[in-house]
Amino acid sequence: MSKLKTAREQKNLTQEELSEKSRISVRTIQRIEAGTEPKGHTLRALAKALEIEEASLRDIIIISEADDEVIHEAIPEVKEEEQPEINYYLIKIINLSSLLFTLLPPLNIFVPLLLMFTMKQRNSLVREIISVQMIWTVMAPIVFMLGIFLKLGRQFTLVLMIVIVLSNIFIILRNAAEIDRNKKLYFRLKFSMI
View 1 (cartoon, rainbow, N blue to C red):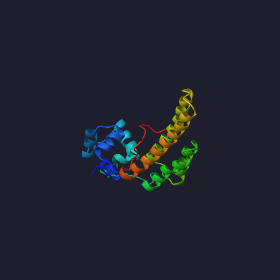
View 2: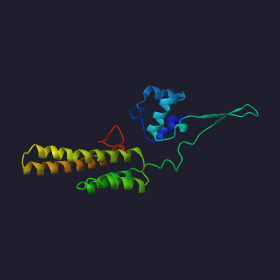
View 3: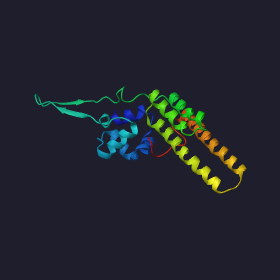
View 4: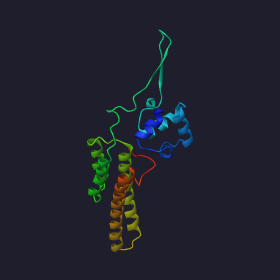
């Protein structure tokens, strides 16, 4: 079995999901899993998407000078210290921690960030959760200020504030449900801000 296929299956990804995450074509992934050695950009993109070291996706060939025999040495897939196991229960707790601070926008970023380090869940999913909260924290005051500039009255301003807070609550709860069902986020960014 190829190292790519093993790493992909350990992350519970299909070839199509890995293709979407790494932006490498499904056909290229199939070729690599069939035995083609990944190189350059392809190797880096796949390693980044799988959150493993590049060397983990290929074999190192060592040639012994004494007897000129070739020894294939497999590099371990993932070291325990470097890549902690993804615990989706803890990720859901980190996501829901933002819920407690929807009225205090800076804390809806700092608390999940603090939990990310204390719970040792430094993975792309948690980074996406925090990035979504960062975007919401930036966009909420902008939308609120635009609402004030429209000068539609105090009632409109109050309704706008409630809608802004409820939108964040909805985002957090919808992402929590998606983590339970599909182990990914429903509202996510194509980039990470941390």
